[in-house]
Length: 614
Image (cartoon, rainbow, N blue to C red; front, side, top):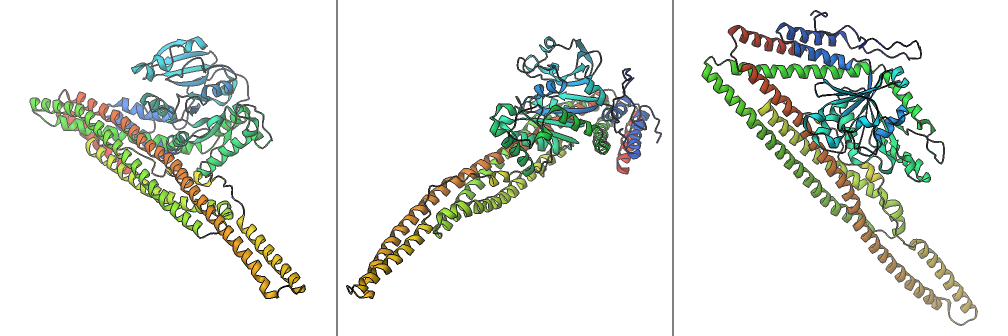
């Protein structure tokens, strides 16, 4: 393989262009990205093959995949649900009101904020072609917002060139994305584009409703499972909750991330008053910028980037092989009329495929409904079984106050944990079966597949450890019973001794007074214990279903998210498949010569052999 083939991948990373003249020497030493010689040879090898067969656009695509990942700029995507303060956070980071906040709707486009000495706002179309240049001011954002876009116009990118010293020094690019709490397909695509190949992500969550279930799912599915190299969580609007609650809220957020197994640092982007200095080390924009600078210089960045590059390169190559196979199938018919008939049939098949995709999607959604019904059935089953077991323990216990306070939380946690494991195993088996069916159908009809995260947690054990069992107003009968027994015995002996000393009644005869009193007291206490048992059993009958219902509703949301995420991935695959089919048909309109057929077949075989060698 010739590493100098054109187009090709350079030995190491090159500057994207001539840097702006600046005599300052405050730019920190940045870890230069370098991927392995083997990876470079692989990309150049595929590039050479495509150039050899006059497919330079595909070769260029492979090289651009490399160049885009090996860019000088360090890209950080800011993501979060609607109204979590993304734009306000970015404005705070840049120290100016750059992005529209409350007076304009969220932009439907991805906005890339980069250093530029001459400030401007550049609008590009989906293919990256410049549409217009605007001054970087508030008025320019009008007409670029979500409510004004439809169709193609919403698929471009905004480039905001900002004369910001911190961006210049660190060569950082900030990517602003639309709100993530929306399943609208175009917004999902924009967010996916922003995260694809970005170096890091900052997740904004508001203190007034921190770490919602949809936020957790987004982090798991879109960031952790996609191996986004660097992550941080930024807590916004902390000043909007009472002072005494702020430290507790940060405690809650850090504990919850830990319980979810997410090793993500937490920061507060602005100075805010707290009741103690426990979190001083994470408060302030200077702390956030320092963390990003560490990311930029992290030596592991190259390894993570290489993984991303190679997965995209191999996907492109496999896609081209599939397209060549389709083209060859259509070209092998020598008879022009029959070949045209095949092409017409293929066009119809592509048209019919839209219906097939839709049928698969509907079928998969029905399976999602079946899976959520399974959760409901399991929930109802466990609600009854757990409540019965705990109520049985109550019927055999006399110290109900102690049992409710000490034993019940532990017993409930054990029961719920066992339930969690059983339900999660059953549900994940169902999801895995459905995902395999879906991929099998996609492979059969379209020679493609989707990837899903099969390690996701369905049941949230954090809910169990934080289960609120409430308080029951019960007196300590065991203690009073002991006191009563001791008191009765003392009174009985005292009275008996006094009467005996006075020769009124024999000692043995007087014992009946105390015994009768004790029996009477015991009946009262037994009656009270039964009353308490009834109270506790009734509380269990309410408490257990309430906790399980809350957990099941969260699990239901997660299941629906998993299924919808698989469908979103399938929609992307559908577009790729359709585009390749149409391309193959277009290339088959004119018959190829024997030499052309041989060339296409040789290309397919060379690509397959290169893949096999990997």
